[in-house]
Image (cartoon, rainbow, N blue to C red; front, side, top):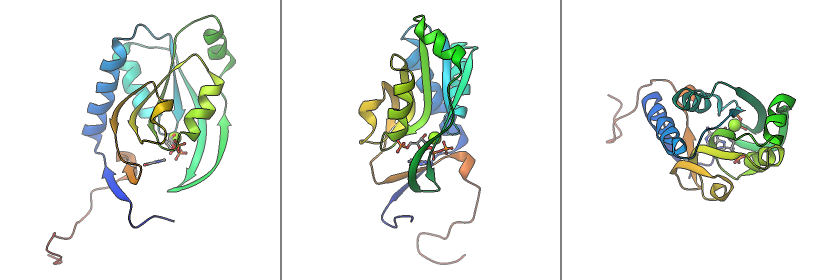
Length: 165
Ligand SMILES: O=P(O)(O)OC[C@H]1O[C@H](OP(=O)(O)OP(=O)(O)O)[C@H](O)[C@@H]1O
Ligand SMILES: Nc1nc2[nH]cnc2c(=O)[nH]1
Ligand SMILES: [Mg+2]
């Protein structure tokens, strides 16, 4: 169930692009990455932006589902990392894992186990999961729900005074 006391942090496309670019700038100072692994679905957009900025051409996905709407369910790995990318990691190549956010850290923990030496980056982080992330841009409080631009639409909002027009 949606917690009525939860704060909301809506993110626009512009802001998400800016924050993902900021993540790329930070990662740019950490050497060359040979491949990026996006945690689908939320990590697909920031991974594409980071891959473009850092000229990473090998882009892999791992599909992990942890939430149904705002309710945390059991972790399910729906698509594993390809053997080709696991082999790159084994031969010492630098792999970057990208997700949109870390919340409780369950997703990060599962994917880190698949690629123990990889660099884990997210755009946003909540306190419970932040220690599992090597690089992130913005921290929000644990009781905040982040709404991504692909989950939003432009809609009418009632005035602060409570009227309807
Ligand atoms: O740190 P955690 O508590 O694991 O939460 C973070 C994960 O939850 C969301 O994914 P979700 O499972 O909702 O799937 P989606 O990426 O397809 O939206 C988000 O994209 C992260 O991957
Ligand atoms: N969209 C979204 N997905 C999440 N999954 C876990 N936490 C969050 C969050 O704050 N926002
Ligand atoms: Mg996700």
